[in-house]
Length: 354
Image 1 (tube, rainbow, N blue to C red):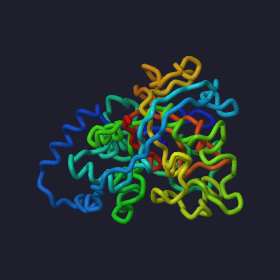
Image 2: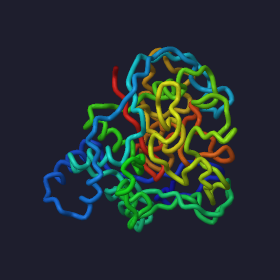
Image 3: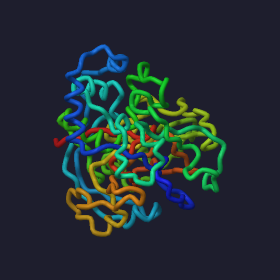
Image 4: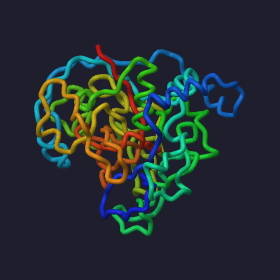
């Protein structure tokens, strides 16, 4: 995702960030203020899709499993035995309708709807210090560079892009009630969970649930490849990335939640569609010292090289994953981003104690 400073680009793959706002508590207080303001603004139309139905969760039985992969990225090693207690996890990713209900009740403004703090980004282009977020834009470009831009050219920082306007000004969610909410920063996910009396899953809980009871299988559905025998198990990218998603799995870009088969624990879209935030800080070496029982992640996360923000864990991959560029839609794969960074492929699902 695009970063806002002017530091030189690194070669090869890396994350790109979009900065955000202050602490969750302050944003929630601002949300309460806005909730008390008179209705009738154009934004109110987005809240008409608010879904007040109880969120459906499934009971994850808990147990012991082998976490990580010896054939994956270095931060997936070493494999190690982990036990988690029973807990509940959202059957689907949080939808636009569910997030609209939260905003309707609180007036909350997401990170992408707030102007970035210039003090956090002293070298940033002032033109980019405006509310907005990172949007995937199809483009004919080499996967690994070199590029004429600092950032991978398929990522564009779009002023005005946020959960209400996923592709930027002029786009809308009014016909996407059942699509996963996107442009969600970790802070936004935590604020929603506080309101819903839920929490984010730990990284260990997430992987245990994603595996669905399967033992050391590559995918959350087993060993079959996507599209094999005409069967599609997750919303991922087909075609030539980053130029064209052919939609062979039935969807170009995002899919509504629940359109692909559940895994062994009854979870939809635990692979692909959108990246999902976890509660943990990210540390690439944590697996070497992780406790066996109910690990909660490191006490402090690695620092993002382009901001002061510690990194948080994301899991599950997105609709942009394919086996040629980003094969991280598998249960063992880890990803990380600063807490104030969202994008058009980032959402979350909720968890709670049993």
